[in-house]
Each structure stands twice: as C-alpha cells, then as structure tokens.
Image (cartoon, rainbow, N blue to C red):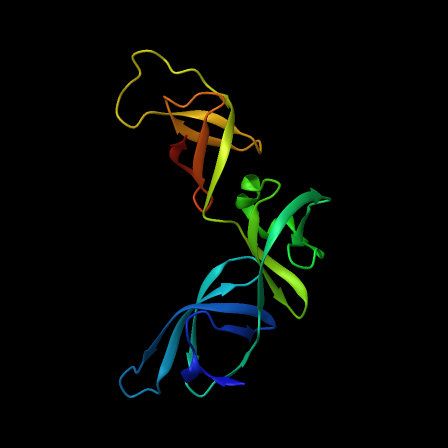
Length: 186
C-alpha cells in the first residue's frame, strides 16, 4: 500500500477495482483543511482520463504493470493479436480498447502492450506511422486556397484528410493520436 503523498507520474494504482495510471498529480493544502492530492488518472484499459482528489491519509494499492513492445499480427472476432518478438508468444486484446486508433493498425506494426497479472490490458500504437495512399480524390484545378484538403483512403482502409498534391500511390506519414496527415514520405 502506498500513501497518496507517495504518488509520482507514471505510477500504476488499483482504484475502485480498476487499474489506473497517474498522468499528473499536485499536492495542495486548502486553508484550514487537511492536505490533499489532485490527480489526473488514465484508465489502463480504456485510456479514459479522469480527475480525482485523494486525501493525504488515503492508502492506495500500487500495482506493477509489465510493458512490452510487441508486433501486431492480425484481427479475428474483434480481438487484436500480437506477438512477442523475443519469445514468439502470442497474446490478444479486445479491439474495442484501441477505439478509433484501431483503423491505423497494419500488419507488422510494433505496439507498446501493457500487462497486468499476466493478461494484456492495453496497447498503444507508435505516434507516427507511414501508409500508402490507395485512393485519392482528384485535385480540382483552381481550388488552391491555403490549407485545402481532400479525402484519401490509406492501405488499412481508413479515410484521412490530405493536401491536394497527394495522389494515389504516394506514401504519407500520419499522427495516430489525431489521425491527421503530417507529411509526404519519399
């Protein structure tokens, strides 16, 4: 058990029977009241971030999360299968846990997978991934105002907004956190 005064960024705790990771914390002492700790907690499975305040006297169970970089293999029945490149052991997580980021998964991506008590509970994609454009709308002549974007489909089937000069067959870099185009890759 850890006291709230022992909190640090990145620490994993068991709170309300769920695993949470402390993203940010701040000690504060409001006037005549007892000292408290304000935190931003990230749910280890869903990625949801919530604010929570703990009293300094609260005892919280600290948990150990194992983290591994694993290669994405395939999807079956809404489960995403990953392989440990050292042991060749396979594991899976529910596709729902990745949410919107799932559309950027392609075979061979190395993802950061977190385990709790030997079970995979979440996965994070690399922040930037290169994709081949499989479909792109044609650019309209004269439509050259600054920042004009058009729809394109990348190799995973995801639709993204790209600049007018991008055409089918081009390689582009996407920020997987926002789904936005970053640059064309040679």
